[in-house]
Amino acid sequence: MMLEAVAFYAFAGLAMVSSGFLLAEGRTPLSASIALAVFGFSVAGLIQALGADLLAILQWMLSLASVGVLFVASLTVSGLAEEEFNLPPASRVMVKLLGVVAAVCLGGALAWVVGGTFGDLAGEAALPGSQAVAFSLYTASASPLHLLGLLLLAVLVGSVVLAKQRLD
Amino acid sequence: MVPYTQVIGLALILFVLALALVLTRRSLLALLAGVQGIFTSVCLALLGFVRMHAAGGGATPGALSEAYGFALIILAVAAAEFALGLSIGVAFVRRRRSVNVENASVLRW
Image 1 (spheres, rainbow over the protein chains, first blue to last red):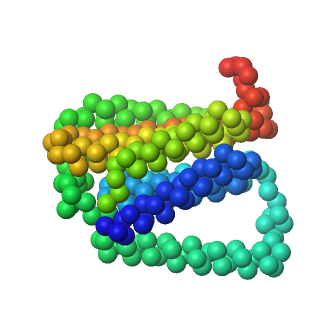
Image 2 (cartoon, rainbow over the protein chains, first blue to last red):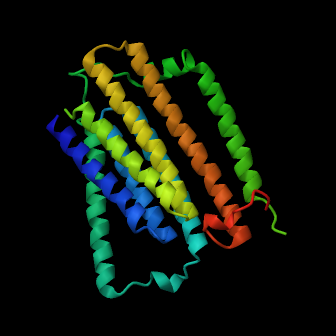
């Protein structure tokens, strides 16, 4: 329980800092997409810390997908040349150190999740598992689910049409 | 155990920050990020309310499952919005050579 609270407050701080950065400083597409990545992952961590495992996994996947796409799009939009990524040696060391710290944190979070010690609410109240959520989606929420399928199909077609549009 | 009031309060703060981002910035990517933030903060608020009802014991397991399913639908809608917004953004950048939404002052391209 203590672990859950620590994770919650850590991810909450990260989410607030990243959204504050987006609001105040995220002027370039690249910095905005990195801040959005941190925001998405911290919200996924928050949801995981609250014990909603199914939603947390979906949020992790959504964050990964959106960040990957947004990162590529922001590189395309900003038109950064390759030489602009050549950092000075001191910055390179800092970037490597940050990478190692991020890898250790992510590895620890993964071990935590796999170990099953993350967000256990069973003692307080019986929260629904994935089977109960799926049952609810296919019974009580069947109409919204069908509408969601139609919406996703429309989005898929619309995205392809917009992306393949020829310029005059 | 994190109190549900803190979860709902955090969701409110994130919602306000994302709304301010949408209202103050003119960059297309920042607007997308703001809308994404609004969706995720609403999802977080929903989880806070689920926690509130679960802790109070006033909700049936079926109702809690429905709330989780609703949060899942919110996340899926957020993904759809993001995909469509990004493709509109790419088309806009290709046509206007800019990410400033002030350049899109008419509905006809």
